[in-house]
Image 1: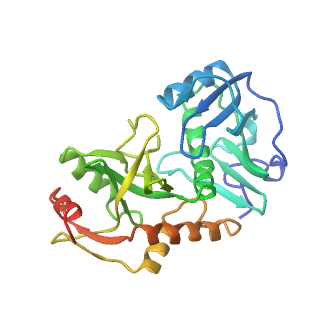
Image 2: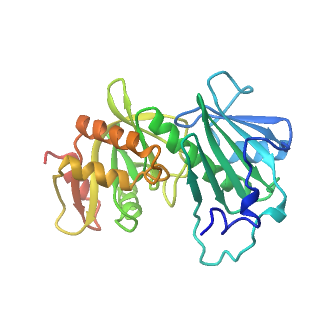
Image 3: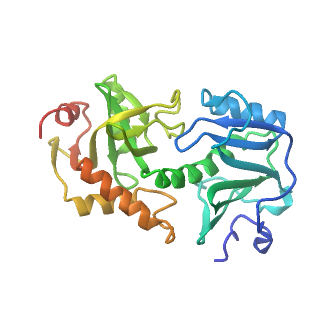
Length: 305
């Protein structure tokens, strides 16, 4: 299928560079992993809606040196295909190239460009309707994924839970039980960072996990930007009895790469992703966790294998 054909009325008219008519003169800085990110070209209503959506990640003041620039432009509604949303799940069409990535989604197109430093642009017809925060978040997820790799880490489709001041990360294919595990962890009174996306990164004291404002059923109320030391890294399987077992490093890298959205299918940048994951799993070995529908599996997680 032609890139963007699912979402765009005229895919061949995709913007060739970051230019266009901004919505307004407002800006918003977001304190998210790999940032801050400076969103410019916003109308006042857009700025206010996004500030509320991403609270408390907004920073005082205008764009600063070192921010990752994200420019917001107008796009006519007629540029986008209309389709029924019943049964539709959010997805994006990505087209990576050596120094750029084009992406298209429902009611927006965007691009990432590397001209020395990563910069991004987003075109949307959404001014102040309910779609805008979700559109910007979906785009920001792609930008954050690439920034995480640039900084030596990875954005992981995973669950992360804090216990005893450390973050434990659980990963696996869709349906492996990440949301179930988060629900059981909440029953035990633990802090769920997210059941959807988390950043794994090297810090001064070792491998760390950074809280993101992205979540599914658990963790949406994520607070200010914060990192936690990694307590454990587990590929999950549902079953009984609860158990944990060693995982070969090469298998762990492959499994984590499969859980690294947006970058794992980017042939221009996935080699760096794999190198990051190899280094991270050398610093903190991954294991397999078998868990059942009982929060007592945490006794296994926190105990000695």
